Length: 219
Image 1 (cartoon, helix red, strand yellow):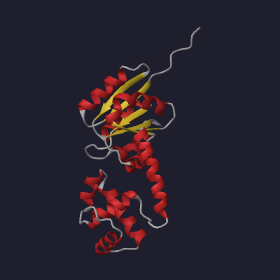
Image 2 (spheres, helix red, strand yellow):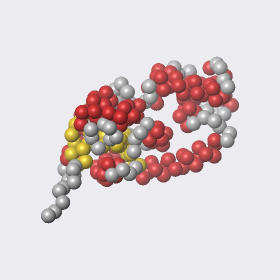
Image 3 (cartoon, rainbow, N blue to C red):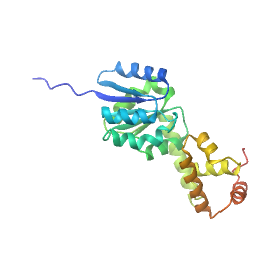
C-alpha cells in the first residue's frame, strides 16, 4: 500500500501590488505540492490572513502602505503559529537582510529573481531551512567582515550611521522613516541609541560628529 501524498505547502502572499500577487500565485499554483491559500495587500491584512489560514510560508513584501513587511513579520509568525516568513523585495541592501532575519524571517530574495528562484526558496524555508539570494549572501558576508573591522572604533551600526547622516543633513524623524522604509518610532529609537552611544545631546553635536567622521562627504 503506497503512503498518502504529503500535504501541500500552504502559502500566503502579502504584497500591495495586485499584479505582483497574481504573478506569484500563478507561478506557485503551477508547482506540485504548493498551494496559495490567501493574498493580502497590506501588513494588517497579512496578519489576519496568517491567523485565519495558518500557512506554512508567508511570502512578504518589504515596502507597503502603513507598516512595512519587516516591522509586521513578528506578528505574522505569531499569528500563523510558526509560519515561515520569506521576504521578497526590491531592496538589495544587506542592511535590510539583517533586519528581516532579526524580525523573524527565514528567507530573503529579490523580486527580480522570483521567476527562477521563488519555488526553490519556498520549499527551502518550508522545510526548515534558511534562504538568501546568492548575490545578497555574498554582500552580507562582506558587510559582516567590514562591520567587524569597524566595531572597535565605531560603536554605531550601519543603519545608525545612515540615520545619523540624515539627521546631520537636517531631516526630521518623519522624513528619515519615509526614506528608510521604517516607522517613525523606529527612527526615534535609532536617534536615541545614537545619542546614547556617542554621548551627544544636541543636533549641533551630531553634525560635528558626522563632519569629523566623513559621513557627509558624499551628500
